[in-house]
Length: 177
Ligand SMILES: [Zn+2]
Image 1 (spheres, protein in one colour):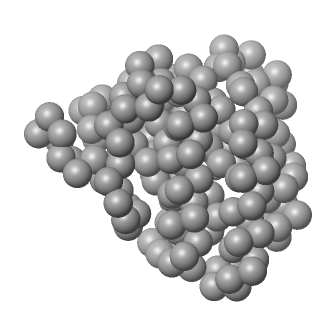
Image 2 (tube, rainbow, N blue to C red; image 1 turned 180 degrees about the horizontal axis):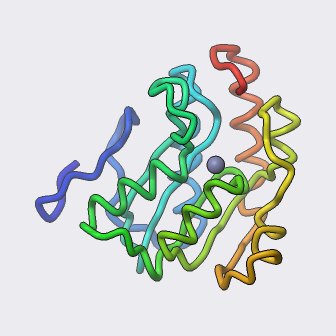
Image 3 (tube, rainbow, N blue to C red; image 1 turned 90 degrees about the vertical axis):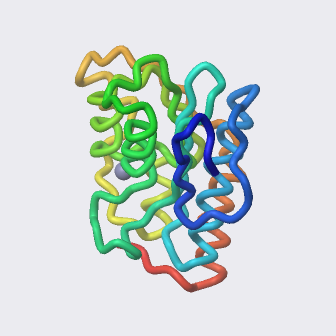
């Protein structure tokens, strides 16, 4: 969709992305939608939305298999989209909604982008149990070790986020990595 002359990239999600969200749950629902859209295409069951002051800046799924890029996690993709949209790497004041607790790479990318809040649903442990080769270092541990000031909000719509893993397993079209 186009808004204010700048294109919001949707990945391959179908349907229009709302320009605004009213609350955290709405942001997470966009992230879940991106995860499920990816699952339907054989991608991995992760999604992310970034918003600032209610304005949706980016929504993306995980594109690791599609792009053969190990760094194409949903959070990194969304940070890149949001930064292109704003013409700035500085996403200060933004909230990241991630269907799964960010891995250390994504947590660090959020730090570099100056994201203020990270809201997530499922945990790294859930992703590991689904078969992904996760480093067992949670976002809380990253925050504790680094002294980073980001606000972490765990467990939002966690059951629905975990359900993306189950749908992915049931369809059997994707592979863990
Ligand atoms: Zn990640």
